[in-house]
Image (tube, rainbow, N blue to C red; front, top):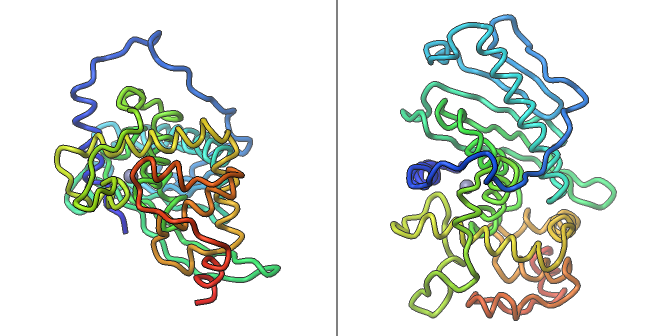
Length: 309
Ligand SMILES: [Zn+2]
């Protein structure tokens, strides 16, 4: 389970400090066609909806929330949100190659763990081998408190975790990816501004970039949280800029092929760098060492020994 409380707080504080932009100042966003299969309401009370890749449920208590009181209000909101989420699905599929074989369940509550701004993703998974390759069967549920759900940027961020969670990525990578989608699909222009150069934001007592062992939403790096999300985004963007729009797609395809994320627990940065090097067609150890990551060059035999365990 993953709590995004800290992140929502981060966003709030960024949004609070961010001057309002006019329409003309906004960066150009990628847009996608409306889904071929139209989202539809599954019940007459406006509490259940379905689209090509999602099942959306509003909990009963949402009827007490302003603008969700009438059936018509809930239906127009639910269908609109599913169109937005289907657009995001196309976006993450294009950049990262993520696809969900089973529908992702989204449940929206008036409050979640006592907080309307809370959200988390839960996942249970099974594993099967098809044609000598690992294939997973997931049940992914994304829960939102209503105020988290109402913010499209938070929606986009958390839904991205629904796709990344299976890979057991270190936080700098999963948050960097979530912020990229938030920024470049949901128009979280605030992050584009927060993006920074690749200088480490700090070193730990061993001289290692503190981002390497950052724990993401569960972290307590008090004054650094905006910086840590923005810095993670900077690393992910830089890799995409250097190695092309297909880089992350190739990277995730290689992970899928080996299925190493089922074997290794949270993937170490050296394992990540091994697969990124394969995707890039060059050794990325020097790039990460320059960022003061503690990584070493792994050989195929190291990977095979992890896979054999
Ligand atoms: Zn996150």
